[in-house]
Image (cartoon, rainbow, N blue to C red; front, side):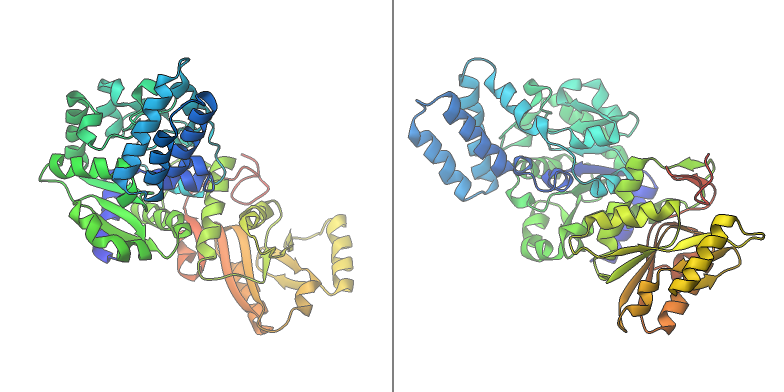
Length: 459
């Protein structure tokens, strides 16, 4: 991983000079690898639609397409896509338009973690994808090369829009499916608008281009960028896994693009972008911030990927009442059925309520573990007493402000012979050095969908 390149990306995001160009990997992540999000899957579906609508199509034409797909280089996929497009357009009834609607037009969002990270970068977005999964999630309008004056405004980040460089399914006349040369795919005015926007933005970041060498859209746009980018811009950067960098470094640099590794697997991309967004932004908030359910779910999906990169707990201990949603939803991504147990927390105040007194009596009789802090009385289920030595425990809260409760609980559990790590959705910057996993470091007021910063209060 290049420290220099990573620092440049953080600076570009902070200074708002970055432009994101998103590829098929983004939609594959968001749809959990739906076959229609890939070039080969989409082309194969087109072949099946042609066979269904035109049973008399010469077999040799379909066999030629299949042969091209068996060796899915960028050139072969371009030829295959052009043939599918031509054959569908020959069939009466607007079949090409209907096929786009029934394929990429029906892709559904399944995982928000990567999309949330992209949102947090707060940079203008282009995409070579034809679907609108990202547009719908970010509540942005799709614009294409046909939209003229709107394009440059969008690329500067001055409008709520995503620029679909090769068209969008909802505007079939805009879809460029299979052109080998990027210059052939766009008219002169569009090209000049993009050049002017890039001159102001400086840093192009390709995301979701792991198959870039084989992606016809990526091949076309990088060829065009290499000749069109002005001298005062930095070379485009493409984010890849470690193995992709090692395998294709020379191929990418030959295209004028610098590869940068974000981790070992594709699951590392969302946390990596989240880290960049966090480093690029200030932790201080001027106005109170209300987090939506959509934002929270995206952050928690990203947090799951982050903590499972190097720590897979045997048991998760949720630390707070309403905030138990955070660990519960985060662990919904877990395929190992890791148990989540909930602590019961009461404010340390006198006199105690009748319900609290009744619980304390029952908890004491059952052998629950009691830990008191300056503000809270915390009770852990007695199952903890029966876990074997060395059990990996993750303490998980929706927010950590002073860190006292988690700190004391971690010390208590460590003294019993357990391995303990700490996680939270949001932390105060003052405890950043002692937290193992978190998503946001914020000062000021913020509000969860289930209540305020202290959990039960409602804005």
